[in-house]
Length: 378
Ligand SMILES: Cc1cc2nc3c(=O)[nH]c(=O)nc-3n(C[C@H](O)[C@H](O)[C@H](O)COP(=O)(O)OP(=O)(O)OC[C@H]3O[C@@H](n4cnc5c(N)ncnc54)[C@H](O)[C@@H]3O)c2cc1C
Image 1 (tube, protein in one colour):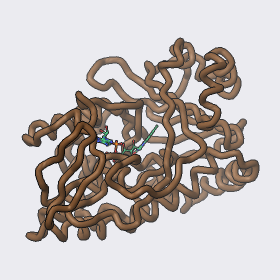
Image 2 (cartoon, rainbow, N blue to C red; image 1 turned 120 degrees about the horizontal axis):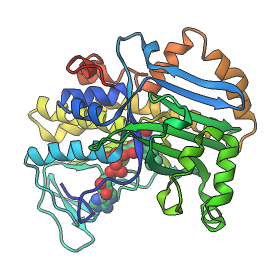
Image 3 (cartoon, rainbow, N blue to C red; image 1 turned 180 degrees about the vertical axis):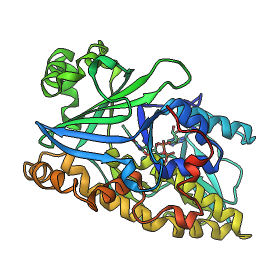
Image 4 (spheres, helix red, strand yellow; image 1 turned 180 degrees about the horizontal axis):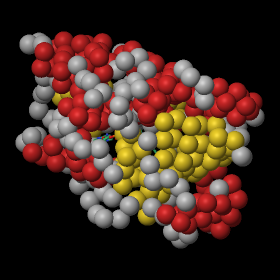
């Protein structure tokens, strides 16, 4: 494994693990530490003005005991990193991959720090959305978001098992995701605020006070969280790119996770899809004696789900993050009320859980795997 940073470390704030990602982690024997360090999420709740426009309960899946997990990236990272270390995988840090070249039926990696790797029978590109091994495709989205990791604040009166969001039109979105205790004892939360990328410099120059006043005006209850922010450096601005590599493999090379497909985190699927991709490749490698054909087999298992969620995220993102005046009206007056009706409640739960297009079946994974092996968490 080659990594550009001198020390492997997680970047960013919290994320949502869905029943799909949990099914992969459970099959790897890693769900228990994840669930212990994260926070069980039962409900996604979004309010625009006085109207509830997002009201999704995992319970509506019909499968018993399903939930998401809000988790700090460092907890997910350390669990996966421990598994990598105990599997004896050698890690070469301080290696920035700038490209690769084919050598017979093998592939060699090229590094910015000079030099090349030994040849490999298969290179797995997991370099993320700005992969230097994948062809340039897609585009950066105009909206990103500010993210902060904060201490969970009961005074805000939010439910500790709910991802709570507030919207005004599509150009204002704030959210609070409970992210559990990590490896400490204090409950944490991820706070996010939608921001246009071209407004980021002006936001920084204006100082925190006007921004805090604006957030509090839209969402008075989140004041205890705003009180924890005293320095703009506590907030990281994340930009999103919507891109899909049409043919995610070449000779002795496969692109997985964000290197294959990335999108805005509106549906909270990216890390879960990366886990599914990795599981698919492991299964393909285990089931074929021919390493050269494993990438094609893995991609075949994943391509329907990837295409479905790339399209769905492309459709849903502007409803929550754009300058449109029409889309938020549709969301507030049509989609919100309709989504309360059966069978749309179940469909919406399936959508946020990552289960549309049945990703688990070709991978030999089951939903109840995610939960059968350990007690229901807090
Ligand atoms: C703000 C935000 C919120 C999100 N929320 C969610 C969520 O709630 N749920 C969800 O499922 N997903 C979420 N996502 C998406 C999720 O983070 C990604 O889909 C996921 O991290 C992709 O994993 P990956 O391993 O493919 O890539 P990454 O996590 O990007 O990892 C890439 C790795 O490659 C290394 N690297 C990159 N370039 C090089 C190079 N040239 N040479 C060597 N090393 C390199 C990096 O340092 C990193 O270690 C969110 C994303 C963002 C930005």
